[in-house]
Image (cartoon, rainbow, N blue to C red):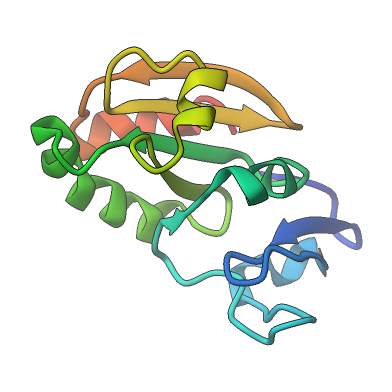
Length: 148
């Protein structure tokens, strides 16, 4: 996937302090650290996202996939290891976040979450697709990659 041409930069939100960082496209695969908190920008794991920082992550140039879930949800628990594995395979081309609908009811309401897990892909700050239900890894990767 080509996000931008060589020599250009992309904005990547830090999963720790939520600061937007500019980094050259050619350095995406090499990781990089946040200019503010010095944490790695990519660690191959989904990160927890709350209402206070949601908009900041939408400003990033990378597609953002959000898993809306709850701790009591059986299918959510079954899908969690798949989502973890997908993060290792899809970063740094995609950011994978998780929103606990019990802790963040405002976000669940804002996006009309009626069943969980619900997965939403955002690009350029806007929702581009969603699917409800747990998916096998190959099907999930295929669904995400069609939006890159």
